[in-house]
Amino acid sequence: MSRLVAEDVRLRLGARVVLQGVSAAFEVGRVTAILGPNGAGKSTLLACLAGLRRLDGGTVRLDEDEVRTMPARRRAQRIGFIPQTPEVAWAVEARILVGLGRTPFIGARGLSGEDAAAIDRAMAAAGVEAMADRDVTTLSGGERARVLIARALAGEPEWLLADEPLAGLDPGHQLDAADLFRRMAHDQGKGVIVTLHDLSLAARLADRILLLADGRVLADGPPEVALAPQVLAQAYGIETRVVSGERGVLIDVLGRAG
Amino acid sequence: MTRPPRPLVLAGLISLLALLCLVSLASGRVWAPFSAWTDHDDPRWAIIFDLRLPRTLLAVLVGAALGMSGAAMQGYTRNPLADPGALGVSSMGALGAVLTLYLGMGAQAPWVVSTAAMTGCLLAVLLLLALSGAASSIVTFILAGVILQTMAGAGVALALSLAPNPWAVNEIVNWLMGSLADRSAADVQMAAPFILVGCGLLLLTGRALDALTIGETGARSLGVNLTAARWRLAVGVALAAGASVAVTGVIGFVGLIVPHLLRPIVGARPGALLIPSAIGGAVLVLAADILVRLTPSAGEVKLGVAMAALGGPFFFGLLISMRRRIA
Image (cartoon, rainbow over the protein chains, first blue to last red):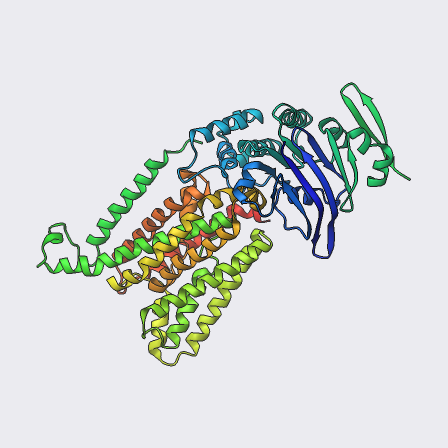
């Protein structure tokens, strides 16, 4: 069982302390959502977990390797990462963009048949086969976000770390993507960690919530514990009510806590 | 989007280049038919092999260096306006070379000029990359290029105004305008190794350039070593563009125009553009040099001047078509 373990992670950006000692352990087979108010350090923590940030203290380990010092290619083979801004610089076809996900695997000869098969599977899983030959810059923001999800899937990593992967998707595609992440974790045994803003979506998608505030872990546990009204009041300064629906809980935001 | 298959495009570009090479050897003030090519006693044989062959080879080498440098810089900065000429890299190389001419060191050994030109280029690329890394906005990047260009121009003007004698002035001015006229096999021998090594380094950045399509964070998450890519790019451009500037002076716009023209044909993936841009650059410079040679005028129009006359309006058009992105 692969484990991703953050221990006392500290990070400063200029004079601002973004993460002040975050510890959390993640296991494969589960979806974890990192939540928290703006500026709480969600994206920064996710980048640290993916080995993309130099830490000012603490460690992040993937099994026995430290993610910062393990060979970058091997790290990239095991951890897939979806950045927050769906940036695409050039007018390339969607299939070529998805193919970039094979970068950690390709040798001198370029893409092999195995790579091509992985690209096909990733595009099918993200539901973007129909866009394969379309220029990515002509796609809508949501379509592009789905192509970028396929890009991360193409590496078939053991861990998928996605920064706000559902932002910009319509409700239908949000559900599709959420289902995809759950299936990856529960059926294929991958580790999925996402940052989110939507509390109800998080409650429905995640097995576990890591709630950050001011660069610290405020709550860590299953949605009904970590998203309890008194916790949310402390984290966001809002008054909420948990509504039990047919398919999990809904977080009804009533107003500012006051 | 249907495009011709890549081998076909490459074969087409190479055939075009080969054809232009033959035309370049045959044409000029004296037309050399094929019968003169094999006859060693024909005076035209000497024209072909002593004068036109080095000139043709240099055009191919310099065009390839500039085309590939432009494609690599555009890929790395994700900015279609990047080019060694437009962003002051060539000008900084020229400043380096002019300083050696000014100090009279150019005559001592030919490698002094080359080394100075390559050092100037390296300095410029490193400054540009440092700036584009800190804030990768197109505006900062272009402004950085403008600053480099202006500083290099001021330095060259200073060297001219303080030049010790009219010969130095003449030498500097002639050289600055960029030309392939009267180059010898020695020039080819001096430039070729640096250009080849530089282009080799640039080719090694291909995969990193591809990955940068999804931004720096995305590229690093794919395991790409951006620090290594940055150094390969900087040293590669410095060697290739620097050696070119050292033997031919400043020839602008090649690196800007060629990748832009090739993108619709070979696709926009930056790594896939490197080799076609090198061949395309060679085609463009060679074609321009043939035109310059055949233009009926008292003196030969300088290649650098001709290229600027062509490239200026092209650059302008590109800017206009991009104005929405910049604003």
